[in-house]
Length: 401
Image 1 (cartoon, rainbow, N blue to C red):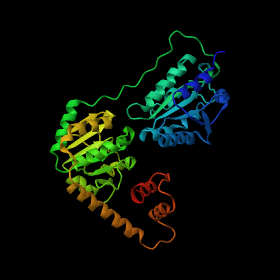
Image 2 (image 1 turned 180 degrees about the horizontal axis):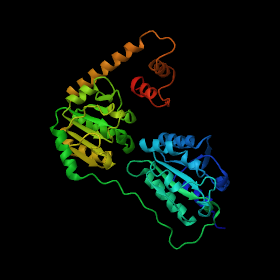
Image 3 (image 1 turned 90 degrees about the horizontal axis):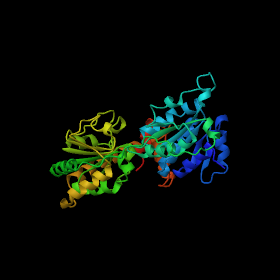
Image 4 (image 1 turned 120 degrees about the horizontal axis):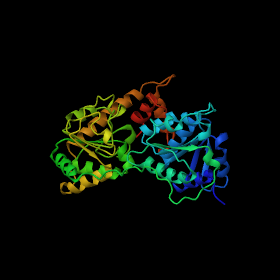
């Protein structure tokens, strides 16, 4: 018996690695939830609001390292996702949002939930894919998962017209094709040669590691290159932990005391996977050296907020491996001026924080004291979630390693 569009959709999601389907059932999407009863390995997670479903899928993706999947009803069900999808785009989180839409015969007739879902979210997702037949569902879903993880990860939308959920699978000679993402360009060899020469000539280099290091999985390469250059490593909030803060060359976050002086005295900065955004630079005030090598998979981020002497569009891990090979004759640089500057900055930060937390505390407690208490009570492996704004600053910048 031919599969329905609902079954084809679920089979395609599962084939592309989906484990959970976050969302809220609705009248037009009930055929999909009915089909879920017989779908092994794909568990529905029902939330109270579609925005919550989007953030739940976002959180799942961040913790698991997989692509999150969210499914909504037409109209407000889809538009309620907008904030979560924009957040995922800013945080480079791979998500696939399957948003249902009215069938063509109901469009433009003042029907409930008549929203142009093909365009409603186009500014907060990387790509919008719309299968027009059951035969196009699987290729669209496969393309969506590729887009979600390609280059700088982010959310992708698949718009499913409601009539496809109950339609039968048709035989086709050639399934519909959908646009595929371009592969991340390989690092230009001449650019790597030039970068290696610049690093070799630098007397006081600094490495600024951003989220792209986490996404590329090149924490070890950062550690090796820092040791080879004797270069202090500064990180953005999203990259904190790429280098153990017990490492003698780990300066920590840009916001730590002494970091501005460190950057001001540096004669070269190697920026890896960072766009030097608002929070990563304290509202673009960071004194990033003019002699800047910037590496990112997204060409639009190269030189956008700080002019780069050399911009390299490539995967950070590939670039680091290429640099390590070109600089292998250097060996490890003995701990010297870079280590001294790191130690001085971290000592200043620790003294300031300790002095503040040593003051008598009484309600209403300052947020830093709350964070210190949490750190003392909970085990080191505890995962903490914070709201945005000052709370996130206290949690990420001040009281936790």
